[in-house]
Length: 106
Image 1 (tube, rainbow, N blue to C red):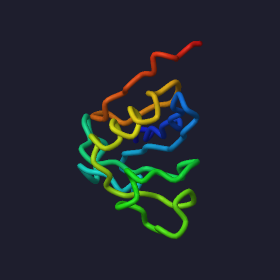
Image 2 (image 1 turned 180 degrees about the vertical axis):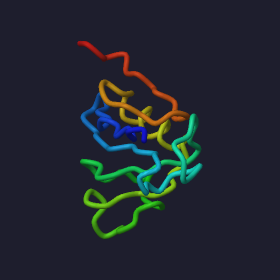
Image 3 (image 1 turned 90 degrees about the horizontal axis):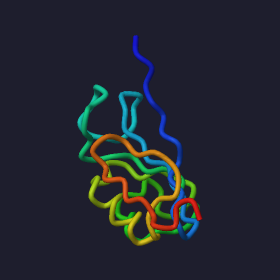
Image 4 (image 1 turned 90 degrees about the vertical axis):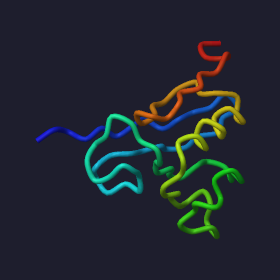
């Protein structure tokens, strides 16, 4: 049995953080149910700030920083990361573009 990868949360240049997961452990991601080489939709969890670009996928819209966002399109994750200045640390599932911040390492 292979071990399913749990990604380290994403931290963006402006301090925005979110967990982005896709695996066979019951995450709200596609393709499913097997671990895939490329995901088209992923699960976002517990962002540290309200993010309007994610709100339509919120499981609990009344608690936007204390909920998960299921089946978010991979392209939307890239857009969110770009909006927040790019990624300075963390991991993304296969198929989600990793937009690295130009401020990484400063």
